[in-house]
Image 1 (spheres, rainbow, N blue to C red):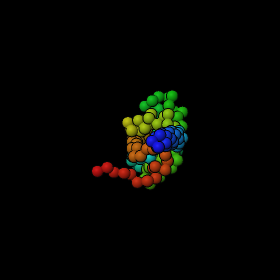
Image 2 (cartoon, one colour):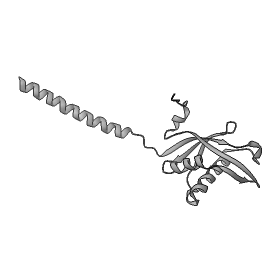
Image 3 (cartoon, one colour):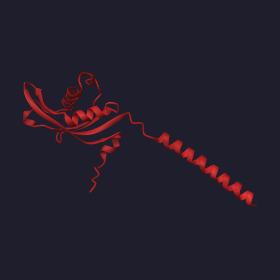
Image 4 (cartoon, rainbow, N blue to C red):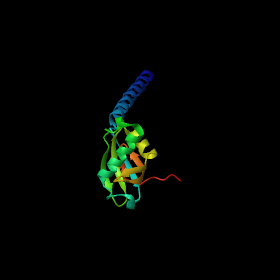
Length: 146
């Protein structure tokens, strides 16, 4: 009788071991493969200094300029896409490849300053308020830790 109980518990142990291995395999498959990073970027500038209205295209050119100014011409060809632009709040959602995320974020955080536009200097600064590997994460409210 003792041997059958021992065999039963040994079988349960082996079954649980297989279950744990399968669970780990499923978790690995579910991991999110992040190809792109999404950032919510606030642009700060004086509207009266701009020679024209701020558009998504102009914001993209300014951000590309900040990245290439900091890291050189080799980064000027990085894909930097503006997915959404709000002219009133001066906020845009930017998509960058995960391989270039650190460079773009560093350039936008540290970069900024006077930019020559239509013969005049315009001071532009950037503030990255949210960043995530999942676009849906930018839609929710910010969490404050008190």
